[in-house]
Length: 292
Image (tube, rainbow, N blue to C red):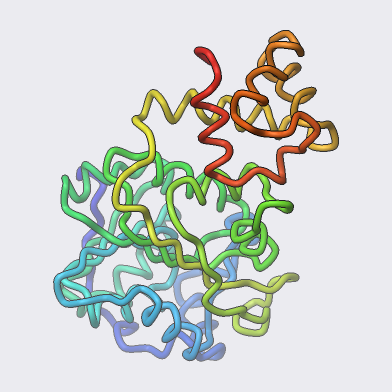
């Protein structure tokens, strides 16, 4: 990796990053303040850190990818348990600070890169890994898609996301969204804990949740089949207030009578709406449709 960043043990290597006073001091020393445009709300609650690490079930042989590592408050906790932690941070000033706060951990590697340009195969090869992160709210959905669709997806995700987003992801048929289907297609999501805004500095305007996604051992479809499958799903959700036969007709540019026939062949009532279909029903629908 050509954009690796070397850790340098310094005066901040053992600072308490959950202390607001000490966190302010270390940010000030590096000429920084929380950047809202980068979604910088720093976790300062030790009990929440412990819950994240516990949910990840990290062993001494585990390889961990942490994206958006920030000050390193989570990075250090991960490094205490894992064999290797690759911490990704885009902002250069923050990366310099991260290099100091994690400098005493030989199993931490820093990568200066936009998380959406991180190739897990480049970083881990074919070695299994877990993705553990406190995700910026503004990039949650693209992050999931990027890593779940990669040639080497994580075998487990434990991430902090906006509470409302977590609830959408774990929704049941009847309340499903494109986001929920996109993640439940790959794994089983569970909310581990709900996290109040007061657990961060500065406090965001919304609450968060720790989300754990156990990835299925085998992908349901090949990469080409997956692309075709999601074209159908996206078409289904393109007009959520309409019945599925109408949204698929418009989204796939097919004749309504053909869409109705495909739904009937898949044993799906033509009057249903996209949010009511389970993953299994979406797969059954896709398998009964001609080339998409």
